[in-house]
Length: 145
Image (tube, rainbow, N blue to C red; front, side, top):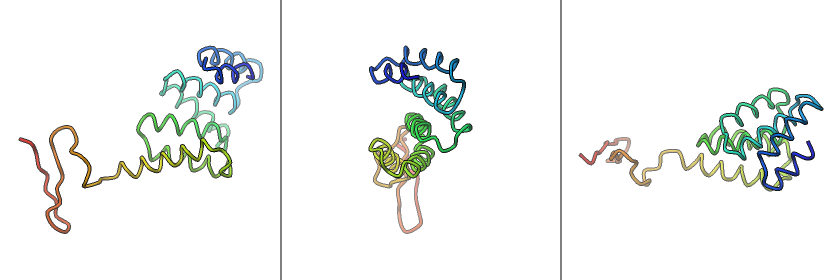
């Protein structure tokens, strides 16, 4: 597992994944091993695999902070800001706010989840439709057609 961590730090997620899989054979499957494998998959851009493995890690240990944080990152990459925010909040609380990266991830998730709520000043979306407020409680859907 230590070799895998060093390879991840060196920017070699493919080699780290192989080391983590070897480590799993030696120490067995636990939340730490699954979280590490999920992190390597995340670094390789395999978001679906990473999500599945990180969720499995959290089934084994629902309070494992690295898995919560990394699942939050996966969810952010998938534009699932609300659930990512929940993961980061839990990780932040369990970590007692000591890790800067978790705090930064939480702040980003909060900002993105609040920005994804309807904002009447947003630019029009693709498709040529706009929702325009006419008077209190009354909206009109306009089209470019």
